[in-house]
Length: 289
Image (cartoon, rainbow, N blue to C red; front, side, top):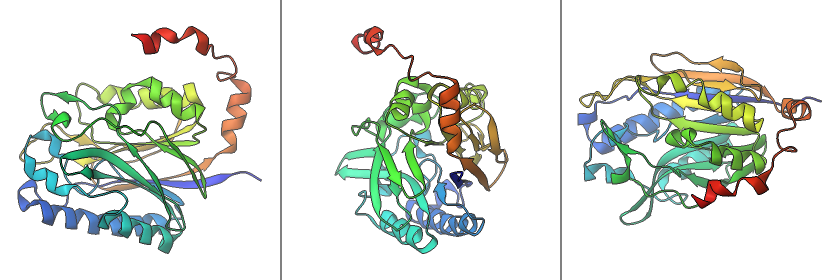
């Protein structure tokens, strides 16, 4: 019997202006996502991933300590607890990207993974942290992740996370494949311009090289007054052959739904024996340099 998993990606424009205040923005975005999660569940989604730092703007457009107020403990903060309740209510797996406080002054770009019965399974912390102009001042806000490349056994399959800038690094993507990931989610905040042409190149390439499904999420719209560029949406799923099987709009909120046949992973791996033919003993220079 085929292992079909209906999966969903949620892209959502900022619902309040950046000037509205941290608490107001956060509440508004959480309320908006609660509604969108319910709509995705009504469409039959079993596994749903939200966009990077889902309950706020992409605040790395500036360097301002006020955005530290968005941090929460994971899993003991109110947002993870709310998402656990929603997971249990709808019977869905949720991947929840948020701003984590580990200790005062120690913050991570994190995604919590919650099983369909509301059980918190663990978290991934973004490994690769960019810091470049204009508008990507991430080292001001985040420490590099220190939890490695976990893969989570959920009710509906083996799920992993690779956040935004991580996607430019194939090494971690390979680690997730070797650890048994079946669906890798990449919640992102990326703007039109320098890297847009890579959006539909790199992640299908990861899917092909590692023979798993990828769900890529990007927020839409401009975030004033920073206007570092247009967040161009176009969230999508691609299969282990690198083919896009569902895609969202460029503009505005969207829920992208795809039926994923996890049995395709075995079929593709039996055709292209990349894992069998690896020569890790020849790759030492990768970690020595």
